[in-house]
Image 1 (cartoon, rainbow, N blue to C red):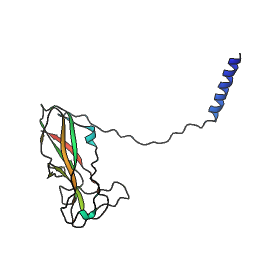
Image 2: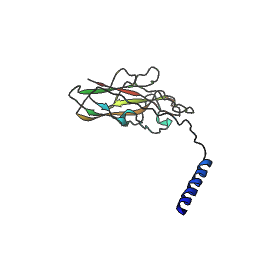
Image 3: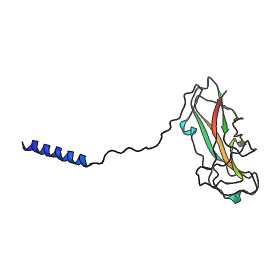
Image 4: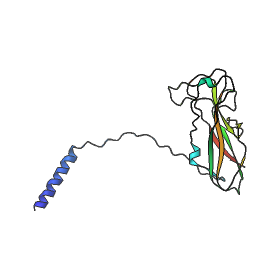
Length: 182
């Protein structure tokens, strides 16, 4: 009988504690975006290549003394995986992003935060084998022969001055890319 009373007292105590607990509170937490696609192509773009950041580093404005001066290029890759080269045996990449007015090969710096000051007189170029690529979405890279399995398409990015005077600020840029198989 003592065990029963102890259990009953514990149950009453637990109920009393629960009665004093705060009511549940639900608040909006955010949004989760799911991206992707189903494709019928010889390869698929590796998820780590689909949304990547290439850190070009920091450079002093004094490194750019005249129009056309460039920073050292930084390598980046786009990996195509699960390739079956028996269907379409080549691939090329086409880049498209906001360009500096009148320039089809220079991406324009963009603000990534509202308080960003944008660098002036500079932009970003994308290269393949040291050749500057168009970034206006019209002309693609050189075609690369595919192998079965994984293929790495290598590129470089660099800053280029578009004026003799380069002003300090954020020099971030962005470009979407498409893959064309042929």
